Image (cartoon, rainbow, N blue to C red):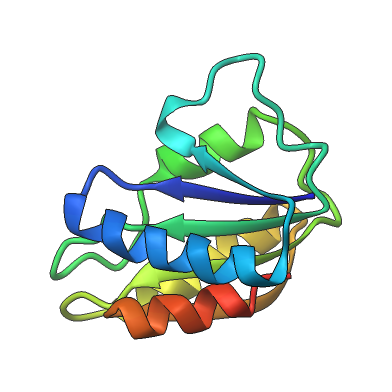
Length: 133
C-alpha cells in the first residue's frame, strides 16, 4: 500500500497534487491520499510500505520547511526503514535547498528515499507521479 501525504494550504498546489495522484494511480491501484494537516491521533502511517511526501507550501525565499511537518510525521507511526519520495514546489529562490532540507529531515527519521522532484507545473507533477513506488 502506498501513501501520498501532502502538506499544503495552497490552492494552486492542489492542481499539482491532482496530477501527481492521477499519474500514480495509472501505475499503482492501491494509493491513498492523506492530508497531513488534518491527521487525527488515530491516523497511522505504519501500514504503508511506501510514502510519498508532497510539500506544496513554500514562500519565495524559504530555505527550511516548517518543523511542524516533521512533528506530525513523527507522531503518526514509525518511519524507520520506509521507502519514499519527496516532492516540493519549485518556487522562487532556494527551491533546491528547501527540497534537500526536507529530504535530510525525512532521512533522519529513518526513511529511505529513492526519488525526489522539484515541481513547477502539471507536466512535472505527472512525471513525479509515475515515479512513485
